[in-house]
Image 1: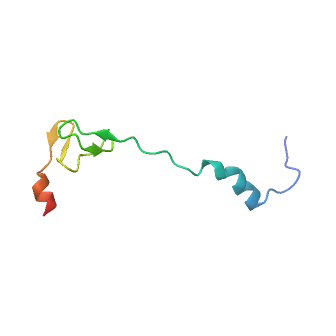
Image 2: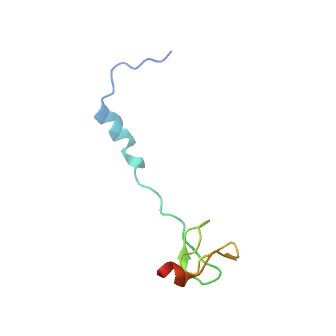
Image 3: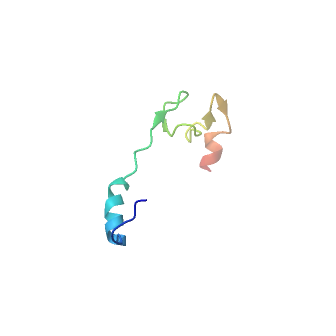
Length: 63
């Protein structure tokens, strides 16, 4: 059974993990109805539509 020869300090452990801190950029798509940029699988904030359905009016949300 493998046993570590000495303790790995918190600083050394964190240094080893430091290369994975950067997140990927989210994939931005365009709305098929109005062409505005939006995140995938989310409702469009400019025309209030998702998956071919409208969920309210954009003018009502602006007030």
